[in-house]
Length: 197
Image (tube, rainbow, N blue to C red; front, side, top):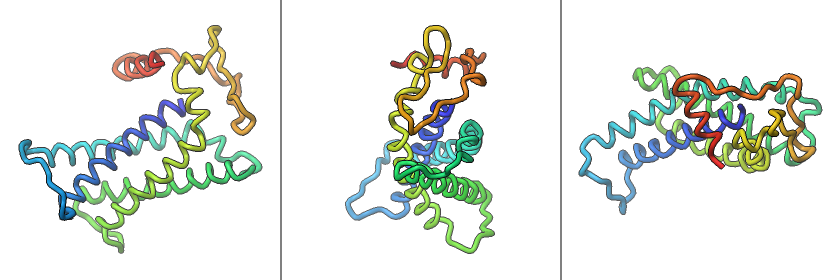
């Protein structure tokens, strides 16, 4: 579940980052930049995507934290350089993400109760988020690859396959049950993800 929510959250942040860069450079273009004008509502479309993806980041981030919260309290907290990079990137990502999406939501109401300039802070935090996300993905890549699909995650008997290395201790097998397809659109999306090789 952490991998599924993680890739949805990562996708939402990448959409926000791309559409945010487009907005930034529309307002502050570099001398060589030329933007398409044949789609009159392109800016409105990109900003709609930006806001929708930003709103989606709230439940996705909270859901992701909920699925991994026992690991946040593991002892010892740091086991080596890889563990330090993992924990540091998570702390930075969560803190920057929460500030980013909260001030973004406040901005939609044209309300600025904070003592810093919104646009510059929002722009700078986007790079912090993408950078910390890249570090987190880099550290967790073997685990992400192992649990990318249901086919790779479970044995034919429906048991969760433990992680490949000692750096990532497995989930308590007694609390893990094979996921069943949820009804509706969510179930179809998860089923499609699980079919992906």
